[in-house]
Length: 516
Image (cartoon, rainbow, N blue to C red; front, side, top):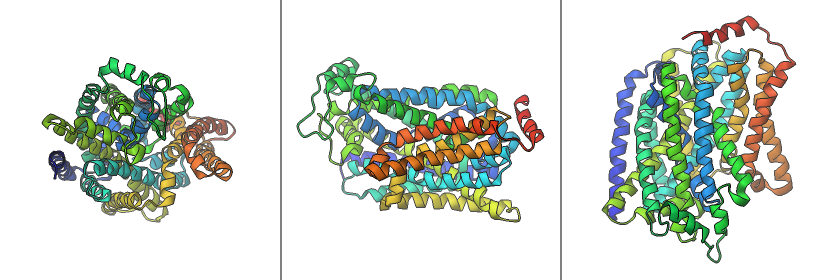
């Protein structure tokens, strides 16, 4: 075993012990459904802000998006990080956090499907939302596993990637099943600190690399860059230094919109607002989470923009997903300090991914155990039974995600491309309009959900028939953005031509904004 591997394993061992301890410590606080799912609505500013930020950024962002877009687009890809921080974080907190906290408390809603049922008086909408969450968030979590597998495979080439994915699944399951949302909020705080320290250290190390030459040298060296012969993704220095993405401008815009506005309708992101304890915590949390996202998002894409210089324009074996792992090894693989930083970076990517996995697992497990199964029962489920059921489904979800990631099941791999856009495309309209307008009807909300499905489904079918499924998958950002736009427009449009059956109930719901 090499010295870098020893350092990395030591750091992973310490991290794992801390995570397990937090899960066990939080167990006694999760004896009720409110405690397990939303921390008793008593989570403070720092924990809430870091929970939001760490759920936003996973190893997929670093290993996938930052590596791919930084390699192909260059400095212009940093706009994705800026958009995520300003639109996906700051604006989301400013517009929705307080309203979501107040309305879900008034409705006693713990999940997105639960919110839909109680806001629009529709059990059918609750069931439909739960099914959508289950079908499309499992593939998303599988993508997170695969991102981590690429990283560990580069550092430990003699060990199969599925071994590392299994260890990650077991560790996530232990503290999630034991401590629920309270455990995840505590661990997210620690994971967020690790992520900030790691990204700052890596940015400094990358900019200090001889091939980069600091911030000023980065621009000059990229400007003079020339692709090596046989490069499967040839580019020019003008492209890599074009601040607006050059020929990739349209692609860049759609990715900014998808990954930024997409958070406005994702249940694992919106769920963080349910648990915040008061308005003062929201004000502080808005600032904290925005700063966090600026550091992590912009840092990740800046690192990706340096990748062609550090790797001398040669795409590493393993393709685009191996770009960031190769950069880590090149920059940090030598010297004691470098190996320590490499170990920190591995833990950073692990922390980023586990925080996303836990958020998605809790969202999906609750959709099935709290929203879907009880909807088909005649008698209310006992509290103890429901608590046991949701813990079982948390465990089952983590296991399913692991299996799908290792088996490369075609349908699951295909759904990964659409998961973020289609879930947000279905929910963004009914969720947002339900917070702000008393005039939104059940028919309008249904139209928003179904339109999101139809936009992506019909577009995928038409493009696949004409150009193949690969072409449709490449258009998934455009489809996701279109689905969100259509959902947001069609909800008030259909509501204008339909009637609310119980306006008194809606008026009572909106009194929540008059309360403290």
